[in-house]
Length: 183
Image 1: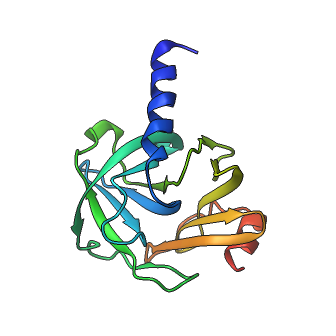
Image 2 (image 1 turned 180 degrees about the vertical axis):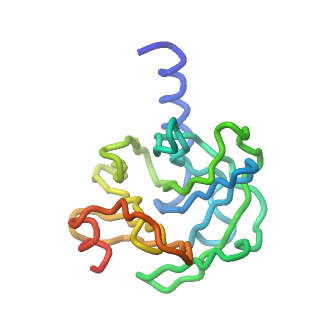
């Protein structure tokens, strides 16, 4: 592992170590470089979120630390919901724009967490993280009309956020993941 990769991994671990509780977010990258973070985290939100970002061919890459900025209106045509607990989903800006060439449009998962945990891309649609000695999985995939971020620990669903696209898309959720969404 190169020194830059080691520094990045250490920064990632240090960044998420000081947040009070684990949680999930939908991170939305617009073509103009604007980034929004959608979460049910209490006000004020965590200061930083560790998020997927668009890689080559628009594929999700893991992960960048984004500093959360001011609360915003969710944006036009962006119906957001929390199907699990029905909490209000709030939208926040990111303090710094993403360079245009690295921008979307793209939608990915973001996490923030308690204690010391690590985060890695487990598969195309799943992230895994360690929170206080337990493994949690964050599923991030598209159904026919929208994008889901679901955080689980074993068979227990801890959080579920949904962003409606208001049009049909090619689903990226597998059959197993689709069953998980309906729990």
